[in-house]
Image 1 (tube, rainbow, N blue to C red):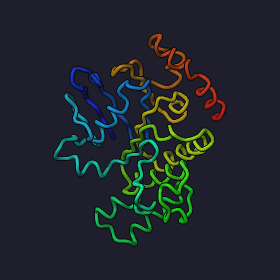
Image 2 (cartoon, rainbow, N blue to C red):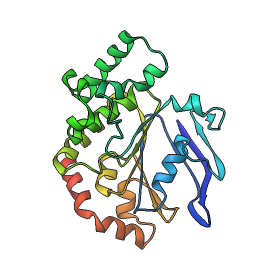
Image 3 (cartoon, helix red, strand yellow):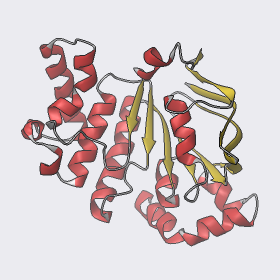
Image 4 (cartoon, rainbow, N blue to C red):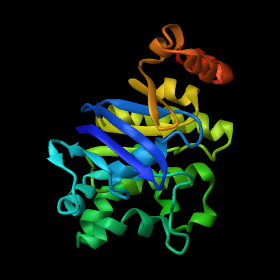
Length: 250
C-alpha cells in the first residue's frame, strides 16, 4: 500500500532524515519510534505531501506521489494528529464532514457515513452538535478518527494520536483502535515515542535515531536481538510501559 524508496530530507545544513526505504503492506500496522527530533514526524509529513523529499520516491498503491498526483492521492489518506487537530469553531459533525462537503457529497450520503463511523468508534449522535471545547480528550480523538476515516481511505497516518491523553482514556482508546484496525483491515503508519504503544500496535517497528534507522523488526527482535546499545537503552528507559502492554495482551 505504501512504498518508500530512499527518501531523504534536509533542513538547511541539518539532515532531518537520511535515505530511508520501507513499505507498509495491506492491513499492516507499521510504527515508527524514537526520541524527539529523530525524524519520525518528518517521515509522516513526507508521506502526506506536506513536505517534499530531497531525494527518493513515495508510492501509494503503486502510484508515485508528486505535485501532480498529490491532490488525488491525499483523498486516499486519513490523517490523525496529536490532540485531534479539530477546528474549534466547527461542530463535531462539521469537522467530520468537511472533506465530504468539499467533494459535494449529498447530505443523506454524509449522514449515512457518519452513522457507520459513530457505530465504529462507539459514540452516540448526541456528540455531533458539540464543539471541540465541549468534548473530552478521548471524545475529540474519536471525532478526529471519524474525520480521518470519512472518505474510507486506503492508508491511515497517525502522528502521536494518543500522546496527550490521560492513562485511563489512552488505555481504552488503544484497545478500541486496535479492534478498528483489524475490523477495517486498514494499512496504518503510526509514529510515537512510546515503546509500549508501539509494541501494542505494531506488526513492524522502525526505530530511528538522528534521522537514521537503527533497527527494524518486531518488538521481540528489538528486545531480544538489539542491533546496538541504543536499542537496549531506548527499550529499558520505558520497559515498564512495554511490560504493562504485555500484561494486557496476556
